Length: 577
Image (tube, rainbow, N blue to C red; front, side):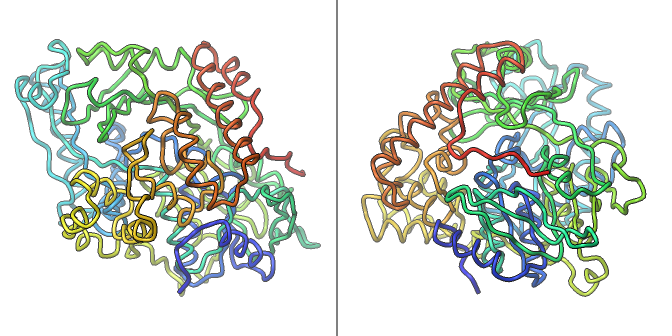
């Protein structure tokens, strides 16, 4: 069986293999949906390749609320099937496929009215719990709801304002590092034989004389070389880029997608006194205040985005909105000065119908799969929690009747780091003693790598200095920087800072202060000389400065213009329509 290890050499070998022999399925798009599709196809025994124009999870899939949840708010719309599906997927991730990455997270739902609101909210959360129990076949994967008085709620969350509640309901969902989930999906797909190449851009689709899509011409952004990948079926999982990529097929069908921006702010853990998260209903949607070990994530917004699709950014108006709604329930009175990080992402909002209603399609509750042209499948919509269902639907649709004899196997396939995870957790004390780490350090590593922690410790065994924390970011070990390159497919410094060692939003300077130290570890592994490192440092610094500047303006148009003044490290080229 192939290794799950992703590095620059493996990428080059995989890219060559994709262009040497035809694939059964070529997946375009390296977010959570595309990664899930690649895994689903590979575990059916299909010859599959996945390409991504930038780094894995570089778009929406690294800029979410980082929750795996059933969508409690959907119960208000009586969308029981959607909630049940999401809760079932949450249970699978918690217990079978990714227990090392997905963790149960308690939330408080503050109540303003003592009787009526508590009654209908209790019914709603009770249904949430019941649907989760049914979805997991009677196995309780998170604790059930618990009712709290005002005093009880204040004990759980001392920072909640006295006038913000008369009591609360404590319920559970779960959280996940979204980018790490995507990386793990790609690695697991590679383990089962998928070919994977990041920084590989589709520039046009190939077609036969009858107009059927037969694959794609792709450009290796690392070298500028172009090559053709032939595939029996091509699947687009390109999110907000769906319409642009569909156009390359010259087909009449396809999906309609609009972009909606959601932003989050990050504040230090000590700035808010609380042991749970908060779930708040707003006039537009919901706001989450989510605890992580070293910080809080607060968001999100939901506003139309009409600017360039690359590099959505938070504006001053966005940040003010989130602060205003958070401060309505927090006594800590957060300000701009408290914020250590922000990030913005674009949701692909699926529009009703398809471009050509005569084309076949499969419409689910939140996502749609359709055929823009012969040989081409397009999927959009959905959410991170239900990526596995979306992937199964996409592959079933693409291969048609063959799906009956090649059913999806992902429901029972643990991701890299999940197999044997619970047994490895029991070895935490031994690992701590062997490497001189405290319990928090080992827990941090377990929650990122699971049973693959032995791959991290192997790097430390080979070079004990890698067992030391980064001076500039002591949450992480030096080994985690090396591992990002040797096992997780990082090709550039920004790949490490944005999607693996996530200092881009965890540190006030977006990780700029750690660049030299990270470069000293990563550059030799990536074969970078001093001039190459200097270019990468300058590129990352300029991008961070532009993001900071964008946060000082009010409008999306201004913010997008400011951010896009800075050229990408590896710019994309116009699609060849």
